[in-house]
Length: 496
Image 1 (spheres, rainbow, N blue to C red):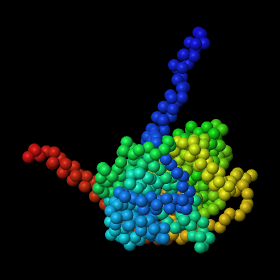
Image 2 (image 1 turned 135 degrees about the horizontal axis):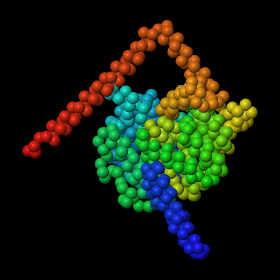
Image 3 (image 1 turned 30 degrees about the horizontal axis):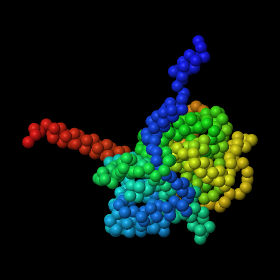
């Protein structure tokens, strides 16, 4: 066979030309994320409340047609009232202002008076997934998104909620929370608007069609390509994307996460990347607003450290950012944490940016964050410990600070995993997991004692829960039957 014929055969069998590879990559990313690749955008990286809040407020103050505002937590404090004042002023000037907040996230942070003031001024406010008698466990799914779109032309996707704790308390020497957001203009705004419209429609009348733009109606504003990944419960779009990214990374995979709980498939993906020579780093909080989750997260460090993943804990005030940067070419920013609750149970919103200049900026920010962090290493006794003993900055978390409380459910899953391993001996337990076992053992012993001493009192909650579940099931079953009969009656009637 001649050299020319061999070359031709190889090209036929392995068409590894740049356009072909690009097509495969585009197809893989689009299918994994469930989000198309959108070109012609401009993006701006925003760090902490110091850069995010002024940009949000400026955009909202310039609104002429509409403001779509969605956030997991909104505080009724100085920062929250600043945003309320702007929304009220714009609504009174005829701008249509639509606000979505999460019931669990904002539980105890904003009073009824706060929402009434907005509604009285003409702001349309909807609360996502409040408790319902016919849905005992409906509260599990949360709206964890954080986004703003103004006039269908400028948008923000971020990890920040709205409250003074993100801005800090300078008079008390309390630093701002470390968090990251992005400002976007261009055709991708349509994807953010559609994500808002979808969740808005789950709570009542849908937005008017003319209030939700299409990509074709928005002129390009730059040369940045990106994807808007709008995850919904049980769709796992971002989980698939995170798995794919960990597989295609060739040089670096640098992650920042506020509530990291390593699940086996993702831990294995990170381990495989390290074994293939990828520099994998994970930056997590040193002090968290949910102390229980800190212990749960640390219990999962050891397999990552043993595989070669470098783990850093932030030395400053709470680290709340959720970002990734890969090979200096790809970056992700948004609301999704690296745990099952975010990947599987929540409505989340993230932006994946495919732009080398933006990714390089993200890398620079990441290295700056690492300079203010402590690396965790395996000590001789194999326990995960800080690489040095330098003192951390004192952390002050206000009593009302609670972050993403739905993360606690992930902690329960992690504890269940440890207990199952301890009882069945299906894997070797690590010293870092001893605290979880001690805590769970103490709780179980306490419950056993209470059952022996006061069995009738502990039976009451069980009876109430069973009765509630029974009533909910019967109510929904009867309603479905009645709805089906109405529909059948309507179809059987002859047209009149």
